[in-house]
Length: 494
Image (cartoon, rainbow, N blue to C red; front, top):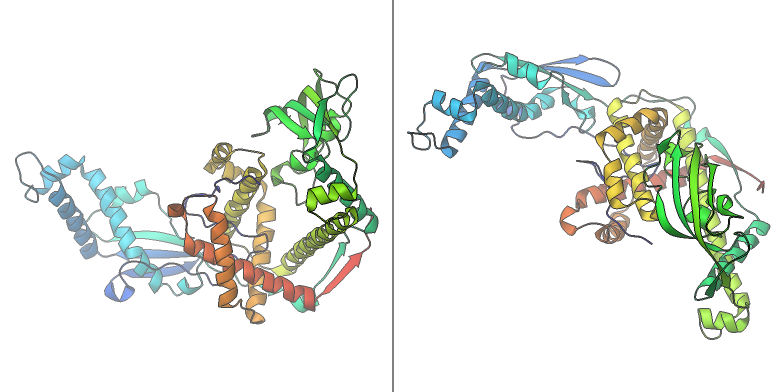
């Protein structure tokens, strides 16, 4: 597996799974001086919407003047003005040295607001139900700077989101889902044969193909590019890429094996492929899209596959191994993989069912957070698969690209956060809690995996622990739903 650094946005915790409980037990972080030490701070609360609160904060002139004097003193002690010792320059000389009153006021404002924000939020009746990191100053910096005077009271407004009230359309214990089985005995047998073929290729000789077109099982060397409506797909271009046509659709791009079938060395081709609509296809933005692709085929190889015998099995898997035992082991792995896949489909179905069964107004800050997490998860998935490089992912992780992603996926992101709110409600009402031993065990596994992807000094251990806890909580809720709610399974459709 390809191991690369993870892509996160500034200030973001590592993303969690689709059903992760991102909304439980959140409150604003109260920093700096407590409200009890700033009794003269004026705070008026106004409900802007069901999910948004507006605070009007009034900072008395005494505090403004103190912040102004403190800032000037700090600078005076650090900066040497011409003709004066440090700490001895008059205010007008220091202010001129610093670039003028506007710059000084900007710094004073930043320090002042940082110091009073915590106490102001602490005084707000709704702060205990506030959503972490959702607070923002209502006015622009330019507007506050224009009205700031250290000898007068300063009034500014803060907006923050609160956890919304939710209503179940019907009791969550009455939820039911319907899923289709993902496989049957015949399909499992076909998967095992394909795995056996791939296993037989390991160490097998290859020879150059001439005089015929590409057929399934060949290995090809291609140059590749893809676009949608004339716009290149980021990270799609490849030069001299080697593909095994048996696995190209899974390893690289769905439809590429069919596109090269029948081509001969030296041939070029332009065609179209339609990307899958299934939720396991990433990136989500390409689901269902029709792409124009260009393929140049340089070389074609075929395997000289060995005869599959007990001798081959013993050489491949160890002395005493038989072909029957190899097939049995592959079958056991296949059944486990397909059970995991069905379990994920059931989890997704319950996620959708929970979201659809809730009446709740999701705050914009939660939608933004879901967008960051989902976009990061998709980029990291593409890095892991080798579809794009870490450098390409960094380019795609721009604020503009994130904003566009959230805009395009807003309805889906809202559904995700509805489900998260519902899961959190079930977690609380059913008193579901992972043990400390479970958290510690999963935390160590997660840290070990992350250490392989980024430097130890970049690790946010508390963020990782939070993620692990949320994932365990999610699984507890999912297990509860699977046990206590109706799950209807339709037969595999083939």
